[in-house]
Length: 130
Image 1 (cartoon, rainbow, N blue to C red):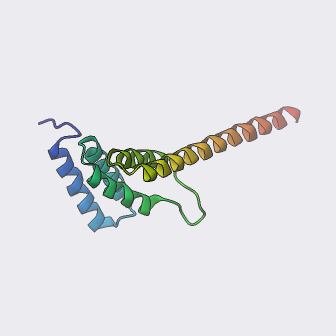
Image 2 (image 1 turned 90 degrees about the vertical axis):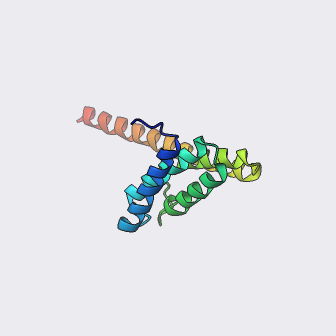
Image 3 (image 1 turned 180 degrees about the vertical axis):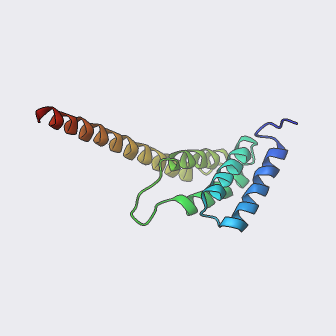
C-alpha cells in the first residue's frame, strides 16, 4: 500500500532505516545522513517540531563544517529547516541564527559559481588567443 511520505508509517520506516544504517555503517555514512534528513523532514512536516529539532541538530553536528571549514551546499536547507522548526517553537533567536547560516552558505555557493564562470570564460578566451 502507498503511504504518504509524511505519514506515521513513513516516520517509522525512516526511523528504522536510520537505526539500521547507523548500526551498520556509522552516523557519518551517507545513507545514515540521508535517513536522518528524511526523518527530520517527516517530523517537521508532521508538526513534531521538538523531535525534528533533535534530528536537525544531529545533522548539523555530523555535517556542519569539515576540517577545512567548507560547508556542503545541502546544509543551507538543513539550516533553513532547523530555523523554521525553532521559529515554530518560539526560539526566535536560534531561528535567526539558522537563517543567517543558510544565507551564508547560499552566498558562498553563488560566489563559487560566479568564480567558476569567470575562470572558465577566461580560460576559453585564452584558447581563442592561441
